[in-house]
Image 1 (cartoon, rainbow, N blue to C red):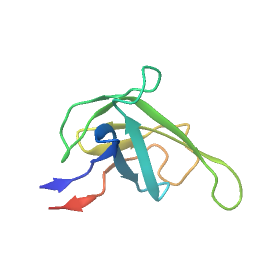
Image 2: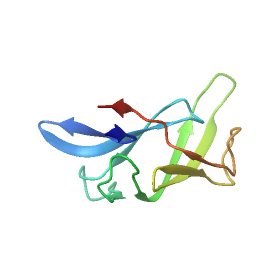
Image 3: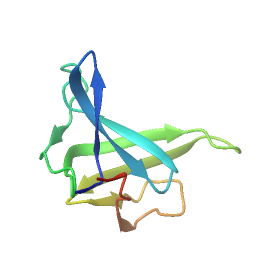
Length: 100
């Protein structure tokens, strides 16, 4: 199975799932079972995941802070128009994170 989302465990419990963001060149963690204030819904599909609602991340690369705002749906990441990176407005496949 080629996974595009990997489970993240804490004390033996899955608290969320990590995807790799090609725009930020790092992982984004969708908490699905962490606390009532920060839960995303997840369809359970590790190969072609869907998370809701959107993910908003502020990253700090060299040269200042940048915004990354996206939806992950059916194994693709849709970068919204308020992103501050080169993939703004585009939809691309999520990179494979695990090739079991």
